[in-house]
Length: 304
Image (cartoon, rainbow, N blue to C red; front, side, top):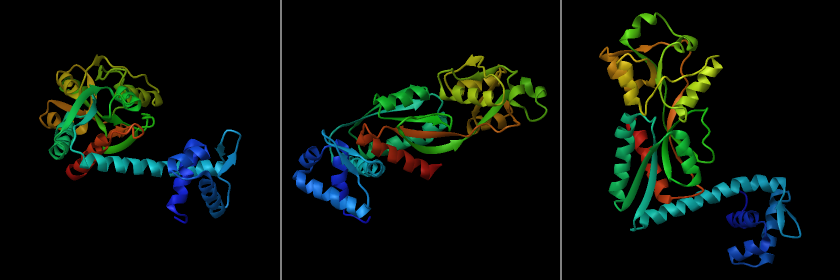
């Protein structure tokens, strides 16, 4: 960094308020000091950062570029301070956590809940509220601040808005079918061929449905769900009972495949890669949720 942090601090507050007198008030200094600092920074960078108006100042193109990066740095400083305050505080904490209905239960039970348990041991005075919803609803809830953080399934097809996403793991589903259908699959199946079978899957308001609807469309097919289920366990049960075909995470189907209850269908085109992630709206900032998120990511990195 070629310039003093104090220069950038002054710039940040002038850019934030677009008013030199307001920035000076926040910084507990005089307007002339603010103006001189901005001039020094502009001279060092070789460009103008602000233009004066009757009501204050406006950012130049170069000023907007600098502010975009500076505000992220200050936001991270705020988050760091909040985390430290939470870590040293003895008061009660509250965190609301959303679990997507499409999250593999074995991941929730083996990674997410133990990581929350590790957090609880270090911060015992924490009130937790758990909700289960489809991923799109959780993304919306986190964006609006209705919940602090959420465990979601996602893909490159799923837009998560302004929330920060941290990936826990990446995975692909496996197409599975009951033994009734073994004779129908003599080789790798195309998406078009698969569309001719009854499909067991999630409702249209889920990320999973949207993903496979998109995947089918780019392969020239319509996606349909004949039996809607609320979770992968029920999807697996219906497939075992020869009610249709389904897509589930490979690790969930492994035991049933090994036991011969179902079989994996080979596909011509690989199913799209998916991910399980934790998301949080940093702008709304619950520092306890930020600390919990670190616990989840750390625990996952050590146990996956």
